[in-house]
Length: 236
Image (cartoon, rainbow, N blue to C red; front, side):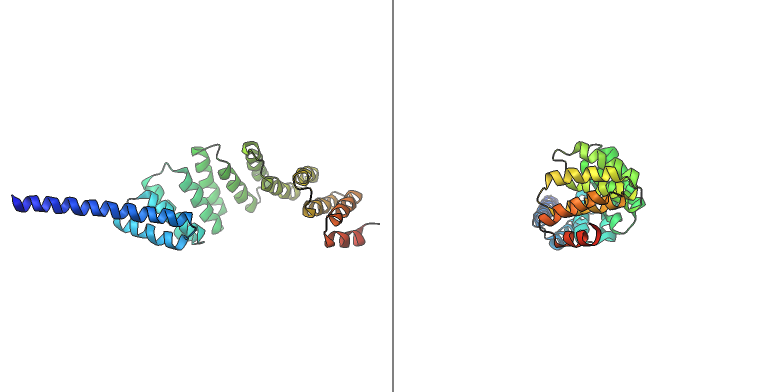
């Protein structure tokens, strides 16, 4: 009886230490992610998974660390393993999509972003990531739809959404829309000469040379030497 009792106590003790070790390693990995020590975090989550191969959150976090280290194949595999255990995780689909984009698997990435969006329809970053993948696939209309939704969702109306939409409009030769978006960017960044130069270049494509010269002139006043070079070459 005493032998059986001793074995039970040993089993309980070992299980307790095992659980604490896993938790401690996991927490340490999270701290390293916060500190952007992605190599250290990858090692800690690897150790967690050696203790518990069914820890889907550890697979996810190791995948996140590997994504930041640009280990795209390994990251994609980790997010897939996390989804095998917990398929109802839109963040895993989103991050796996980012890993696939790193491997130029953009069409597959769009499929992952679609699933993520089904899980969380109003998650701004999911739509933005899909717009980037669509841009790479030259689906400019689809990218514009996603960027429109991002602008609708965004409280601060991030300028990167407008800048990307400008690029898509230019590819579609919808110059007036691109010029309007650059007008908004200029309004928000009045001291930056670059949006004026970008708008001038688009006005050239739209056949408005006078308008382009005015924008180059304004960019020059804001301190851009290349704007004056463009004026010398193109403006009377």
